[in-house]
Amino acid sequence: MSSGQISQLLGKHAKSFLFDIGASLYYSGAGGASQSWFVEEYRNVGIIFDQIYSWELTVHHPQKIFEDLPFEVLVAMHYYNIGVNADHNSKYNPWRFIRKLSRRSDFVVVKLDIDNVAMEERLVHDLLNDSIALGLIDEFYWEHHTGGNPMQYRGWGRQSSNNIVQSYELFGRLRGHGIRAHSWV
Image (tube, rainbow, N blue to C red; front, side, top):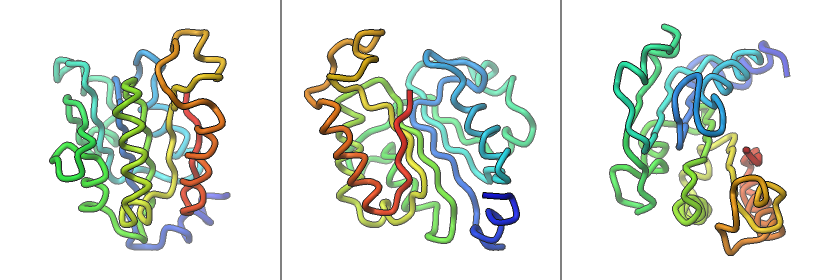
């Protein structure tokens, strides 16, 4: 899709959002630099995020969080150096943020990778039961730690009761709601 097509898709009043759940730092993280990857990859197809909401449980000094952010990212960034909460009414629930901040005409990208299997799976199941948030998310990236995945032997270990077939089913359900759902590693 070209930048012109994306601009038409978004419309003139639409905003673009990145919700990065398990953000690490802009140029570094346990699994790599996801923040900069999302910003750069989407910029390459004509999307500049108007707002970026990031959550990271690992405590970082504020200067470390913000020092490497390009100016365009800094003005869009809302960084919460706390963990998320899967409770539907929690002020730290990312789906609550999405419901409050975005509209159907907006472009919403979510990345979920907090390395807490139980919390991630609960968030995904809660999302699948949240028709409003489901209708607002366009793209969803999730590192689902499952048995039967080759990554189980390269650092993950056996952390989930789900297997890769059940993971495909969850991704299929997300896609069935119109979300472009991708596995993230």
